[in-house]
Image (cartoon, rainbow, N blue to C red; front, side, top):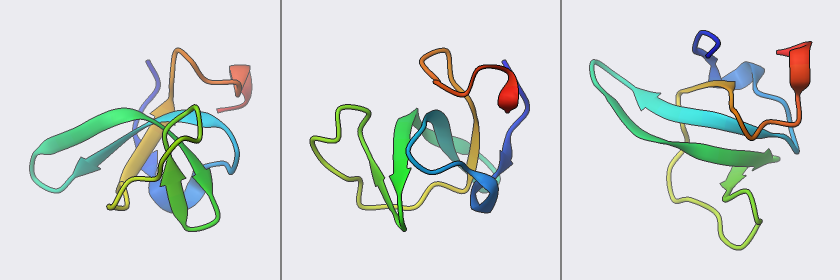
Length: 66
């Protein structure tokens, strides 16, 4: 698994693993960024928080670009 990156560097429209890391790690899940909103991978619903970090997911479509 790759290292956690700041959320402002996350790609748009790609499935990535996200987390909130602020002294502890929580809300770790695969999400997709569309503008300022973060959606479940099937785009069925957005989450009511903004992650702080991201990394390449096993379900990512980024391949070796991340």
